[in-house]
Length: 390
Image 1 (spheres, helix red, strand yellow):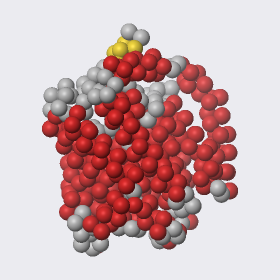
Image 2 (cartoon, one colour; image 1 turned 90 degrees about the horizontal axis):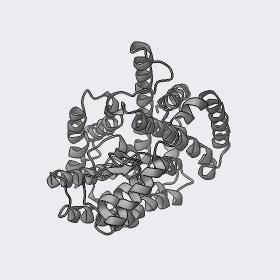
Image 3 (cartoon, rainbow, N blue to C red; image 1 turned 135 degrees about the vertical axis):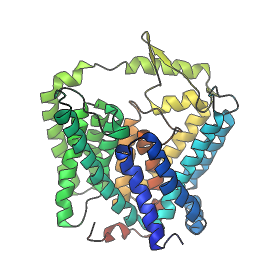
Image 4 (cartoon, rainbow, N blue to C red; image 1 turned 90 degrees about the vertical axis):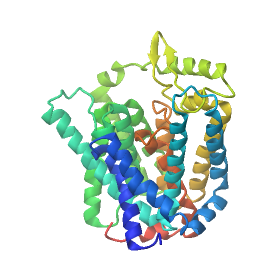
């Protein structure tokens, strides 16, 4: 049933909703409701008809999903000592994560080119939203060019918006359309995405994007990736020369002090943590911060060292699965997404089990995309059979 045209259309719209409505939905509530109708629901409805694919995934990627199961169970157990006011809401969010990860093998059904196609359109769509945000921020609202551009919708935060837009640039760099006319749009879209990251003045996003592009030749091993890496280095040097005062004006933004304070908090509750969804503030240099500005210390604060170990196991297992299929276009994209996300998670994102937000692009999206690698290894040339219409 999941292979019927109407089912595939439903799920395609669902994935595009996740990728684009983060910027275009009028409110966060509409975004969440759309995910329920267009993504969670079809994953639940079609999981039985796609049960062979799901079982195959769990068997082949057990090093991803066994620690994932452990992380979910440990998170549920931690609700018994958390200080959150609504433990049931935290449990519901874990269900959303499970359905999100279930969606990808059901939708792909062994065909990675489906995912690539939708991600290409999603990346181009995000480039359009980036252009709209730039026009609105500097043109309509008449902000000065030294101001940090804000994205649309949930991407209005300069840092988180920069991460999502930067990640879109990464997957577009790896998944190039075949059609010559689409390649023209691809180049324009990449330009908009990179300009947005620069104008957001998010040093974490810019650094993650630059280092990922510079590392591309390691797993891509072709002339195109080397040309892109050299070009990115030249552009980065020019951008730093022009924007040096803005880059250095904010210093290190308390990051070393926050890290030291976070490690102190971890040492106070090393094994149990505060519990899933535990409310906390980091006190560093006489200032209170809402979170630890680093996903790994955030997980340790909430779920203790056991939770941190389980999450790190999941995260590294994703890289392992992608690296085994690194000769394929799909796996190369997943490696790039994983590296960018790993770097981004060091600087700001501190939300692993919250409601779907921009952070999901650099936490759960890489895990979901990695699930399709099971069939990429079986059919290594599948990614080269993307229809010309893409």
